[in-house]
Length: 300
Image (cartoon, rainbow, N blue to C red; front, top):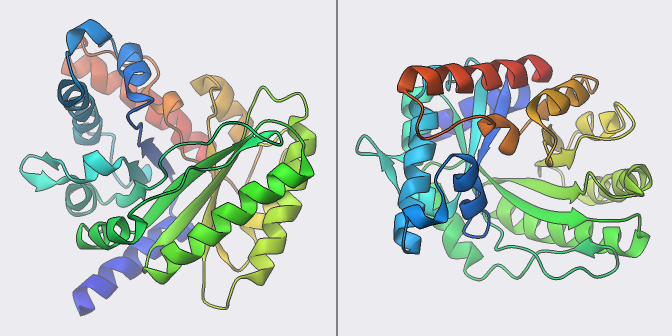
């Protein structure tokens, strides 16, 4: 147990102050075909879900095994539930990340989004969450991630999103994990800046109400107003504020992030931009390394 506590403290310290970013490798069933297509694996390359997920696992393993994917630039990585149960070189993925790469493992726990209402999409129910969290602990997972989406500056809808996120977040804290609360603001929203101002105040209200000792992380869209979320990053109940790329191209996302001194990246699409299955290992590693260097520089 002492060793486990020591590892957890080391992971906590790395996430709290590490000079790097968190890689988002958590595409789920719904987003996997698109992610694979961008990687050059079209839907005619697999005939069922098992083959599709096998292609995705091979892509993720290739990313994780790359030389530039280590704790010097990548301080954490978010996994899909199936990925957590897979192995790399015979080692469970979460264990491989921490023991071989020094990268802190997180787990995506949400099950997707409800239809839009009041300008937002709240999360679907998460059946079996307690069991999933317990399993995650056995894999050495440090924290979790769950995503909602805000499409417009609707105060009631934003309040509902944040309330749901924090309610589930408390259960995750109680299970001994650190939740990444992710109320994404759609980058194409016509009232993006107004929605972000409402979101900030709503999050602050919930942070202030958290019990002493509870800490969360926040994953937020890069704000229209630079440094808007500094007060969130400085809050004693927040371990770290990370940014999602939200569909911005890598260079654009990095330029926007660099204007926000207290946010680091947690990019998915921007991390894998330009990667293709047909690349040689040298070509793949060079392209991935370029993306990692750009995202790392923007994060520090």
